[in-house]
Image 1 (spheres, rainbow, N blue to C red):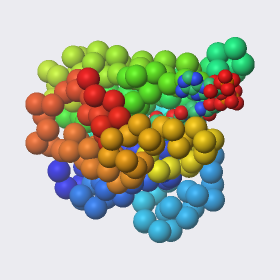
Image 2: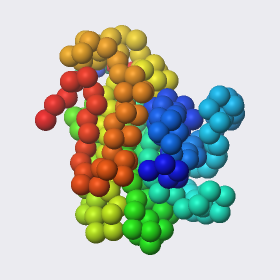
Image 3: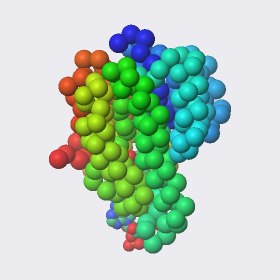
Image 4: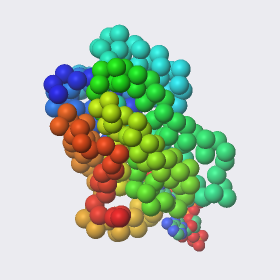
Length: 241
Ligand code: CAA
């Protein structure tokens, strides 16, 4: 697998950063996307040596231009990790249409956008690995997250459908469903709410970003060609089914 080109969306911070670094350490050429945090992206590239590309994953034309640029500079993208995601939490009776749409566009439509932009070259090459980062909250639902749960749940359906289409061309499509992981996103949950959530995690702690990256690495391996359409839950035992 040495030298395969991987694109990680939201790849400069949090779980995405851990995925970018794990792929690099395993011998992949990695390009990390980011949406807006210039300072974090600059620091990331300085510290890791991994190039960062700024574009909005919810914008199809921006994804198309970025994938074309990356292909021109580095070659065709062989591995995509659709990791970029946001929260706009709030109960339904307080949620605005903007909160709904932003999360659907960034978390779910982005998976269509990026996959659509790489699928033709993956088909032509007869190889591809797509991993979509879902969530325990897409599997089980979560109070205050109708938008996020819908988007993440959508990712799981998207994964199973695209897996069927990709199979004959050696393109696997899988999902990882993280639980609550020590990242800025989870740190933004009110402390009293988070305390109650952690109390329900059988291993008794939040996950670490590296523990999610490990699962992604497993799924993108050349040797993982028989694993497709699956969801790997990494949540400390918080939700099992
Ligand atoms: N189940 C049932 N009732 C709940 C509840 C729950 N899980 N959480 C809160 N409530 C109740 C509260 O007890 C409270 O009831 P009372 O009025 O009777 O006291 C009522 O709902 C209102 O609660 P809040 O005061 O918290 O309401 P709020 O409007 O200020 O905030 C909220 C609502 C924004 C949803 C807030 O509760 C919150 O941020 N919750 C965390 C949501 C969450 O887990 N987000 C995950 C982010 S991380 C992530 O998404 C990554 C991932 O993939 C795992």
